Amino acid sequence: MIFMKNNSDKNRKIRNDIILAAAILVIAVAGLLFLNATKESGSYVVVKIDGVEKYSYSITDNVTQEIITGENGEHTNTLVIKDGKASVSTANCPDGICVGHREISFVGETIVCLPHKVVIEVQKETENQSLDAVV
Image (cartoon, rainbow, N blue to C red):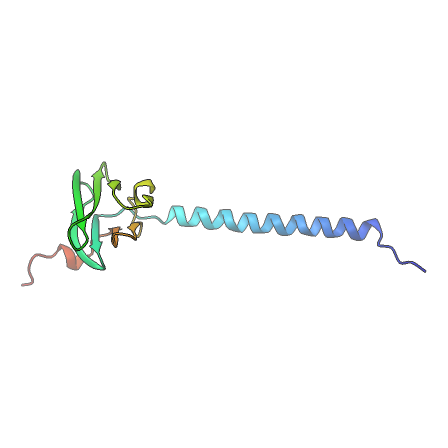
């Protein structure tokens, strides 16, 4: 006696697979919508070289800053802040990933140049950073 699966079992599996795929897609889209809705515009751009903060600029300023690193100043990246967005326009690193990175403007976004150990990050201003003096 040979047991064969009937068509209803096969159809049920296909239907369940489609329902599972649709549920995963709905959850993924909802997650992306939530992340995009909670993005917060940054106040300033911080440049860290080898983990140490070197420069800080308001994201509303129009700035072009050459970032020079390396023992003999052989590494260069050019930071451009324009129209509330920051990007790297040129770099002499071998891969150029930092130059190809899209512009950043929201809190927590970063551009990283690993060969030069440069991290450019958008941050928001906190109350403590805006105080000039404590009375």
